[in-house]
Image (cartoon, rainbow, N blue to C red; front, side, top):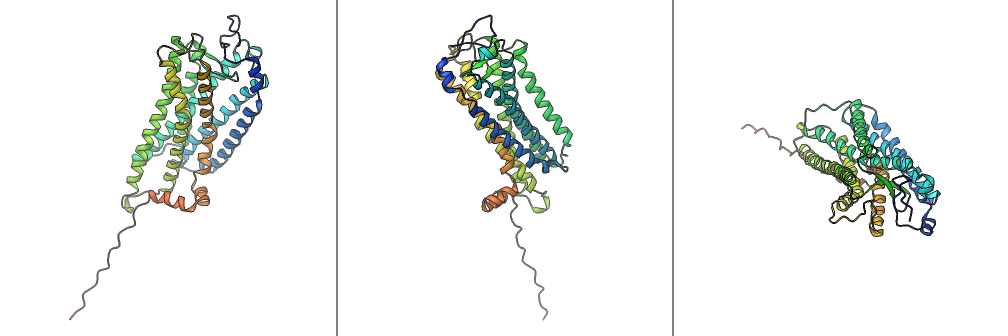
Length: 344
């Protein structure tokens, strides 16, 4: 176990791992490979979104929000992946590489910031599409307003991530020693900060789910209306399909971790020590859920890469036709031509 001396940084709590185990599992290749895959995926998604960014209308605002989301994922992989790979190269010995916890606090804040941002941006995208579909006379926000929304999400996530640096909650080294995250301890500050992070993230996922459900229902009603009352539908359907993909990925990747954090913090009696130490089984669970959550940064860009009309029609023409036919209006009824009665 690592020492927990008061002379050292507060992040260096005891971790259930021996020196032999650190040497056996310390490998920077997993983090480096994971980061390279994520960087390639996000760069490919940014290039796919570059064409959609031009122009006006709802597609432009949606593309700006999508670019903000992909850019956030890209930066998150760069920052957190570099720190994790460096700690693997140092044999997971955070005590030697960062005795004063400056790097740990930085990584912990980055984990919270880059974890919460995609959830907030997903909810913002759902709200933008919901307004565009459910309000017929709604005028799409210009692209600069969409980027202002991205900046607002960054500011909200950044403010939350800075709270432990101001005294609410703590960032500490997590098993096996390659990453830092919020401390799941029994102290009031740890409890309040952990619940704030988890409940805010879960609320963003729930809001996106609600708004997307309402939008899909409204889209079905609109495009089942008579042809005279319709608007061009292909672009809206494409955006809606992409948004549903984002919501599915975020829910599958992040909800297990958020629910786990809430369960640990609210369990009575507490399952953590005052320093925030978990049992070996709980530490393994936390590591697995964290790895599942980080896949969100890799899967998000593939939603934009694959869920486009051109790609769907190329990969599976039958599936694409059925998908767009779901929102297509029924064909107009054939009115029989009236015949002029012949004279006597």
